[in-house]
Amino acid sequence: MASLSLIFLLSTLMALVHANTPLPEKIPCGISFPASKDRLSIWEGLVNGTITDRQKGSADLFGQNGGPKPWPRNSRNKVVIKYCYEFQSTKQKLENALEMEGFSVWRQALGGGPSASSHYGVEFSETKDSNGNDAVPKDALAIIVDYTPGASGSATIGYVYDNANPEVCIHINDREHRLPQAIAHELGHVLGMAHEHQRPDRDYWLKYRCHMLWDFKKKIDELRRYIPEPTYADLCDDVWHAWQVNFSGKDYVKGESLGDARTNPDFTPKKWNVRQSSMYYDKDSIMQYPSWLNAEPVCTRVSMDYCPLVENNGGQSGWVEDDYVPSGRDVEWVKGNYPWKDPA
Image (tube, rainbow, N blue to C red):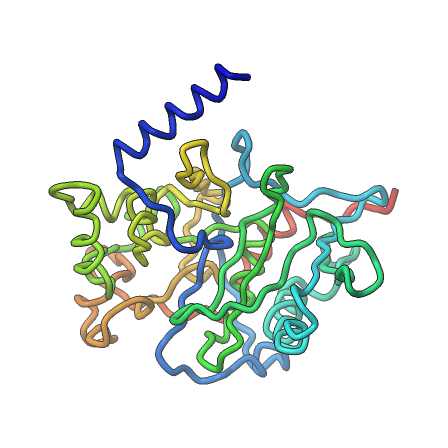
């Protein structure tokens, strides 16, 4: 036991000497979805069917030792993701939004509830908190109000139950400026989906201009606390360095994702390889960020040179639209990872 403790201490000291890295004030629940400038609230259209766009998509973090996994099936051969609200006040604030902007949007995209005819077999089910009635499973999804300025929410990716760090959660901002697609986006993370724009083949399909993110100049200067002369690649291509200074670009790094709040023995966050689960890139996935997100106001459809993320159309730039509903390939991904199986 003493030797293990010594090894742990030495690894911690080496990491601190190497990076001089303080922990952030708050390790995020998972992958964030930033809030925006003022946007029109359109979630009614997602529910009543006036918005019916369906396209393509899919990236995830599955298939890695110790990494996120699909949610398991229960003894009845069903995948039931149990969730609970952190407080009764949380339920009052978020219950309607979670249903109307999240669960209903996915159900409509998937063709109704889970069944043999809809070809998928995963559902969400509320379980009571300790002040209610039923005991809460340790791997229940915690629904938490997010008061972070400038954020729509965040979520862990997939099933990450760990006895040492069991929390799987989704943070949702209860403010009016929350993006209308934010909750459905975060539920995509909960199911196991990563950002489409973090696929390893991203650069073939998109142009990513990290230096056009609104906080680039500030964050590369902050990185000097850890690296004397930080380069563009240090900040933009390394998710760990981006995490050190809480750079918005941490959610854009190609091929790498944090996924959840678990840490290594040296207290750095665990990172996972992003897997492209389809050969086709899906710019219309609900897991794809639009061009304007995290950009300065000068980023517009007529000034795309100032945008951090644009389509690469044979060398020409194209505007990446907001995607308000799960695309056709988002749906295929869910049905492929959570197919319907007859009850045991």
